[in-house]
Image 1 (tube, rainbow, N blue to C red):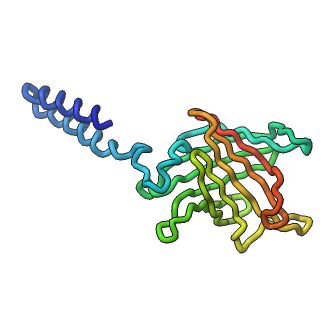
Image 2 (image 1 turned 45 degrees about the horizontal axis):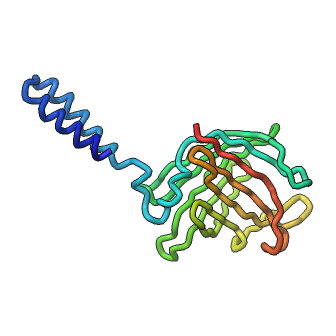
Image 3 (image 1 turned 120 degrees about the vertical axis):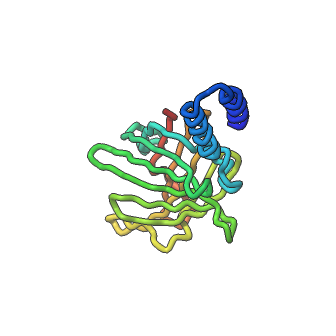
Length: 201
C-alpha cells in the first residue's frame, strides 16, 4: 500500500502542473482517500492478535455433526465475517448458521487482555441470549479456547452441565476450521460436538 501511495503521489504532482482548479480538487480528493484508507489493512492489527490475521475475511461455512462412529456428516451451513474492531485491537467473528429449522447467530470477539496478557474469546448468541468468556492459548496457526473457568456451565434438558473447547485452525490460505468439543467432567474427557469449515469467498 505504501508503494502504491508514493507512486500515486508522484503522478498527481506531475499532473497538477497543467490542470485546472477543478481537476486539482479531484486529484487531492483521491489522494486524501488513499491516506485515510491506507491504515485499514490486516497488517495493522496489534501485536496480540496479529498472528491470527488469517482469520480475517468473509467465508462460506459448512457445519458437520459427529455420527457417533468417528466420522462427520454435513448437517448445515451459513456465512461468517471476521473483521477487526477497536483499531485492530480485537478480531470479531459474526457468524450465522442453520441446521434444519434451527438457527444460531453468534458474535465472537478474540483478543489479548491488556492487563493479564491472556488470550480470550467472548462469545454471545442471539437465539439463547447467552454470554460467556473463554480462556485460550495458541500454537502457531492454532487457537484453543475453553470455558472451564466460566461461572455459567451450559445446562442440558437432562440436567447435565457441559463445558466447551473451541479450536480454530488454518487449513490453507483459503480454508479454516473450528472444532467444537464438550466435556461433562471439567475437562478430563472431551467429545466432539460439531465442526465448522470456513471457505474464503
